[in-house]
Image 1 (tube, rainbow, N blue to C red):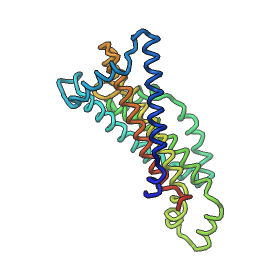
Image 2: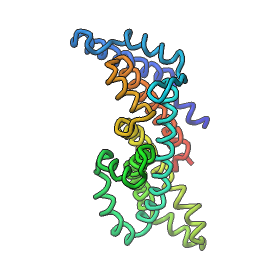
Image 3: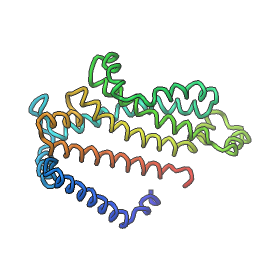
Image 4: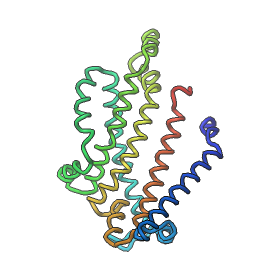
Length: 262
C-alpha cells in the first residue's frame, strides 16, 4: 500500500483540477451556444445544492431524495455485478486452462457478449415477473463478459516455466491453483472486474429507465418528464462521480495485487 500511495503526486492533482476546468469551460460554452437551453454550471449547482440539502427525504413512490435513489441503484449494481462475477470467474478459469473448454464456450461468449441490455430486459421480466429482478438480471448478464474474457486470457498466458515449477515440486491441483494460477491471473481478473463494474454502472441507468420505481436512472427519466434539466445534469454528475470512484477503487486493487510487483 505504501508503494501505491507514493505514486500519487501533487502533479496528478493539478492535472485533475485542470481536466475539471476544461470540462466546465466546455459545459459553459455549450450553454452559451444553446442560449441557456442547456443549463450552465452555476444554475445546475444551485439545484444540485438543494438536492444535497435533504438527500434522503421520502414523500411517496415518485418523490424520493437523491440519496435514496442512488442507494437503490448501488444495491442493484452490487448484486448484479457480484452474481455476474460468480459466473464469470469460474468459467474464465475453465476456458483459460482447458483448450476443450475454450473451444466449447468461446462461441457462446462471442454470440451473447454483443447483445444489448435492452434486448435482455423483456426476458428478465418474463423470467422473474418483477422489474427490479429484471434490472439485476440485465446487469449480471451484460457485465460478466469482460471479467470472463480477462480471466481466461490471464490463465491461458501463464508461462510454461511456472507450470513446470509446479510439476517439478509435485504440486497438487489445488496447490497449483492457489500458488501459481490464481496469483498470476489475479491482475487480469481485477482488470476484468474493473471493466465489468463500469458496464454495470452504465447499464443500471438504462435498466431503471425501463423498469421505473426507484433509482438514479428512474430519477433522470422522471426529471425529464418534469422538464427539470438541472436535475438531469445533476444526476449525470453523480453518475460520473460514482463511476470515477469505482474505477479508482479497482485501479488501487489492480496495483495492490500486481503479480509483477511481488
